[in-house]
Image 1 (cartoon, rainbow, N blue to C red):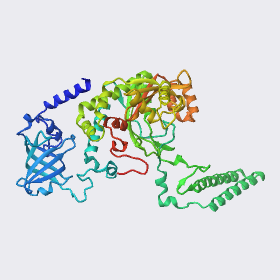
Image 2: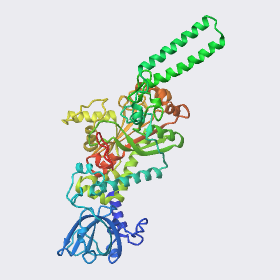
Image 3: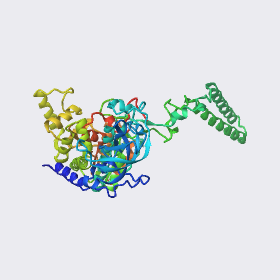
Image 4: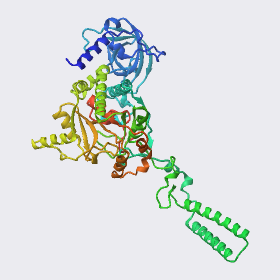
Length: 569
């Protein structure tokens, strides 16, 4: 038996030892509510006969004995399990108000053993008081008890957390976020908050959302009014020219110096007025233009072009080069017109940076982190994983266990290409051709992880032409010290590299990638002043959730998905 199975047994043993003593939620004094997950996890001998209060939303309601009895399945989001609550008409006269799916209730009752005929239940509550009811109109409630498609739920984004699927996703997401902070904290990393607004393009791809206040300013009524007409500008230019000619004549005729100075002062004032008028005349559609006709971003909020970040890596590197081991965990944005099941316009990234570390250290850290997260889920979200295994992907628990307990494979990019080419020669068909120098497609990545290695595998030393400018150039001058972690079900989960610490090489790589080194002077300063060998990686948080849950669409594992033509709520 593997470590993951042993952990599952230990977890079950821990739950068997739970009691309801001290189980009331600390911040629900108004009702002294006990989380339903705690109730369901408590051993029967410690629960039966106890009177407690629970609160939640009705999943299903079923009347019996001609309306004298009502069976409710209540869930409060603390776990995937529902608590059956039995309510009699003498306890609450209007039982019909309670049975509609979506109704919120707070109920006091006694915990009892269910009848022997009841299947799948270890305990139920018999209501003694109904303390609160939040009615729900079943005729208009969109999330009825019948099964809804995930596509439909994306249109009801504000209500979909009440479904079993999205609730389980939320708990897994929360657990993985906690596991992330725990792992890095335990391993001596400092958490750094990097900015969402930046003037740097980390990836160099240019697919960035621009941040500007110029458009909102341009929409103001006064901005749309033409303040200066072209003929007024020409008239002012003529006035400047005439004044200049007059001064020239005065000097040639030997006019009094005081009169000349007075005329020069008048000319300076006219030139200033002309400059202001020309600037005002370049305001087209309420947006100020420069002399060459381009938009004048010096008038913008940040005094230049600014964007939503595609990565916090460059900024977090500045802290790694002072505090050694750091990480950032936050939202990133990409204006990529993609509608695939693997892409979002807004997504979360985990990006650690390790000073005094090379590519091997980077790969080991990435592997340890992913395995830690999988172990944490097995210990803390096993019930949710069982839900996903039942409803979406029967292999998800085995996959999480396998990742948690099995060392990752490692192979160079060149060796990976050789393996793929051999597979093609043996009859394997890929949509995208295989040759040295390509950026591996998802089908190639999944074949390596799922069919060849049959476990996560780290591919390293990629061609420099398909990787970012900041990745360290290898001695062959053809490859860089980059690595990708490929996993079953998803493909690429992590991308990372040893960073280029040599100033001259980094400047040369910037030019090769059509970047202007002067715009990254602050980043180059890290190499000018106390450069250090360092490395790091980035993990798309939503892809980690896809890996663990078996969900197919990335839009279903983030609370508010953003993709082209969609920004609901």
